[in-house]
Image 1 (tube, rainbow, N blue to C red):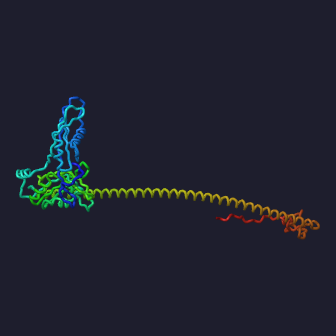
Image 2 (image 1 turned 45 degrees about the horizontal axis):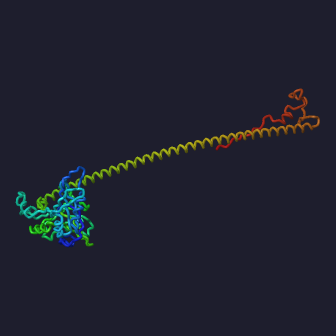
Image 3 (image 1 turned 60 degrees about the horizontal axis):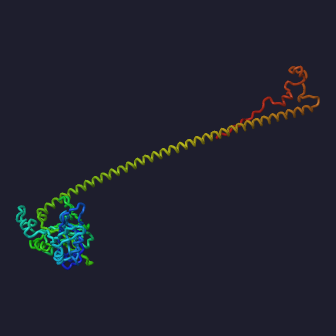
Length: 436
C-alpha cells in the first residue's frame, strides 16, 4: 500500500465514522504515458526528472498532489499522478492528453497520453459469478456466500482504542466503523491472533512506505444488503483520517470480497482446533522450558553448593595449616625458652656451687687462722711459765711406763703441742643450692 499523504482539501470527504475521525475520499488518480523517441546517438539519454518537470509545467496554475514514475522503459515512461479533488481530474486530463513535449537537445517531440486511473475493484458480476461457479461453496452457509469483505492496508493506529494508549487495532473499533452499512455477524483481524502466523505461515504485520504499521481484516455482514452497501461505498475510495487538530491524511486501501471461506463456521472451527493444538504445544514447550530451567537452576545450585563446600574445605585446610604452623612456632618458642631457662638454671647452679666452694674455702682458712692464733697464743702463754715446764701435772718419778727420756712425766700427760693442735678438724656442713 502507498504511504499516507496529506490532504489539504477535504470538501469531497464522506463520513465513515466521525467518532474515530475516519472518512472516505474519492481516489483522484490519473495515468500519464510519455512516448520516447528512438535514440540515434549512442551515450545520449532522456532525463525522467526533466520529463516530470515538463508535465508539472503543462498543468498551468494547478499542481499535482503526488506525481511518481510507475514504469520506465526504452519506449515510454509511465507516471501516476494524483490531485486534490475529483473535479480537477478532467481539467488535468485536458491539459495533458494528446499534448507534446519538446526536450532540449532532442529534435523529436514526445507525445503525452493521459487517462483516468483504472481502479482495481471487484464488481457485482465478479462475486456473483465466482460463488455461482464455485463447486465447494454452499451459498446457504455464512462465509460461503458474498457476505465478507477483505480489507488490506488499514493503518493500525487509526483503528486503535483511544483510551488504551496502544497502537494495536481493535475489533470493537472495526465493528463500529463498518456497522454503518449493516449488521455485522463476525470480524477477524489475523494479526491479533498470536498463533495465526504459525497456522498459516504468513506474516500479517505489514509496513507502508511511510513506516506505519498496517493490517488486514475481514468483515462479515449478516445480510447480503450490508455487503452490497459496503462494497458500493468503498468503490473508488481511499481511507482518510482527520485528527483533532483538523489536519487530514489519506491512504489507499485494497478492498475485495472473501473467496477463501475465511469466516465460515468450518474455517472458524478449524482455526480454533489448530489454535488449541498450538496452545497445548506451547504449554508443553513452556513446561519443557520450565523443567529445563528448574534442572539448570538445580544444577547451578549444586555447583554453587559444591563450590561452597570446596571453598570451605580449602578454608579448613588453610586454617589447619595455619594452626599447625602456629603450633610449631609455639613449640619451637617453648623449646627455645626451655633451653634458655635450663641454661640460665645451669649458670645459676654453677655460680652457686662456685660461691659455696668459695665460702667453704673462706671458712677453712678462717678455721686455720683461728687454730694458728690459738696455737700461737698457747705457745706464747706456755713460754711465760717458770722453769720452762710445759706440763700442768706433777712429775711421777720412777714411773716404769715413762720412757727414760721423758721420765718424770705421766703417761697420761698431754703434750702442749698436741693440746694446742686438734688431731682432726671439725667438719663443716656442705651447702647445696636449693632445688627449683
